[in-house]
Amino acid sequence: MVSPPAPSGARHDVGVEELFFSTTDARGVIEQANSVFVRLSRHPREALVGAPHNIIRHPVMPGGAFLMMWSTLQAGEPFCAYVDNLAADGSTYGVFATITPLGEGYLSVRGRPFQTALRDAAFDLYRRVRPEELGAREAGGSAHDAAVLGLDRLAGLLAEAGFASYEEFAWVALPAEVEARLAQAAGIPERPGAQGPLAGMLAATRTIEAELHGWAGRLGDLQAVADRLLAAAPRLRATVQANREDADRIREEDTGGQFASAVVYLRLWAGMAPEVSVLVTELVAELEQLRRSCARTRFRIALAVLHNLALGQFVTELIDQVPGFDEARPAVAGLRRALDEGIAETREQTARNAAFAAAAADRIAALRELLDLPQAMIRQWLATADHGSASFARTAETVQAGLDRTAAGMELLDALSVECRRIATPLEAAVVEAQLDRLRAYSTLG
Image (cartoon, rainbow, N blue to C red; front, side, top):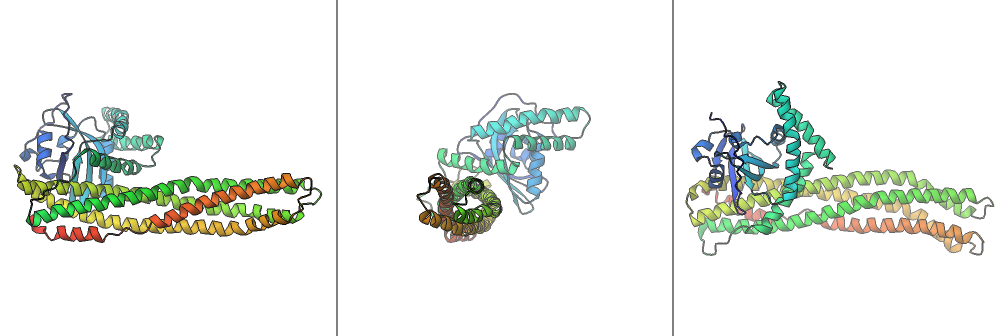
């Protein structure tokens, strides 16, 4: 095997519209490489096909990142990352890479990174981890041992940055990158004069693109509602605890027994605090599950958008018969299959989202039922108590403030619950399924 070149320090950029495509076997050996990959890697195609994909590995990249990648892929999940690659002439080019399990191997679509802040954050981690890996190697450790060290350090640094796992970083990065690409690149081209199966495929990809954008919007709305519920639920727990403290104080101060009738209700109100706390804890857990599920689904939709975009571009190359257009045929087959599997997973995930959202809404209804009775009883006492009492005004003001706090908290939860149920219905996939059927009908193109 030819030794990799030393990095020259030169960089070359990936074009806004350019998308790399490659497939590998289960060991990471390249089976297909499109013209963009050949040109920007500056390796001849015959040097790429049959070579391990790490032929383009840059020494700045930590082994821990690749260990994380393989762990994710072998678990059957897609992976994405900001990566610097090393071209055959020693120059560097940066990509945002996605890798998806496909059959017995893997399919990769890569392109220009658009989200500079996220890319810089990723490379800041790489710069902190890589020297530690190299130090472990110099101390006599194996490459695997150094990569394990790097993986542990990456996990720790991600936790410091507020991410429970690399997966959560990926859930942010891929949708952000795809959104930026759609804003800056031209998207799937139109070819009004095209005819035949290729014209049908191109039309199908454009329809799928529009549907996926709508899906992403709904998931974004649902995730925003989940975030607002997560913020509101603990405030309700704090409100009920404050009410309990008010009730205890009124009972202690009522030495003359003038608020005896109210104290009965206030004790009931105060006694709700532990049960409410349990319900709120369960609600927060369900909302966190919903938030994570929505983030995962948005990741899947963004990946489907990217695969569909690449598919549309390759179909356009076949329509236009650009130089080397035959190389696009196997890419079309692979991308169509990846898109098909990705959409199926997305549909299953959105059904889970709907179930999580319904569970959260049911929990809010249970909270409402628990709190309604003592609230009504205390309001009745306020309406019928002896307002002429000298100390009534102060006590009534305290009780009323507690009632108002509780009512405001429940009204917010109720409103968000309605939004949750409205947005969380399973996605209507009939249009996308029809277009996928249309794409499958042209299987001979692969």
